[in-house]
Length: 274
Image (cartoon, rainbow, N blue to C red):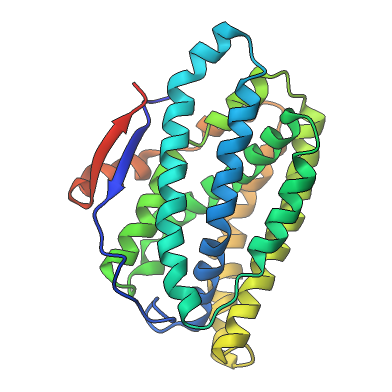
């Protein structure tokens, strides 16, 4: 694991933005708004899960993971706060966050299980965020029509998700997590994640008045299912999770490192796990 830097994003999120902030495209804006709606409680669950999990390791292993945990928590806590501010503007425009309520109900159930299950769920979701981050970094045109401050927000988030993509996986392995449950939880997470994001996106579009417009569905097809669409081009990376020799570090992080290097003026380093 490379050193994890905690960064303060230097963008203005006090000023509101349009509901269709991504170049006026209703679908992509609603989709990204839906994704953001899941982050505050989701990121907090990831933090809490790894805190629970690392406590079950031996003192020596706890010490070996201390820097990674500190960096992971710092980055995820920053993501949570930023997206709370982003969501504030979205909700003020009449959107309703139904996804968050479902997440909280599931968290309550997962927390009744042993800590290793919460870490396995976190590991599965972290793979999803890493795969989506890789797609976004590889397709900067997706946000090319968005305000610069929002482009920066999403590319910074994607870069940091790539940066800490291995932490929960390594802790799961260190806890003695087996392959059967790792894969079972990925299947469960896949069902929940895909249905949740599509449900929330459709609800956002319905409240926006664009759910039944042809242009909306053309955009959905182009950005999700066309040759370079998110779901189509990410399937192979998602499937790799089920390989016995899989490790998140196998996914290239060059674009993440490159974005963070060339956009240093967009953030201030406030801590590092080293």
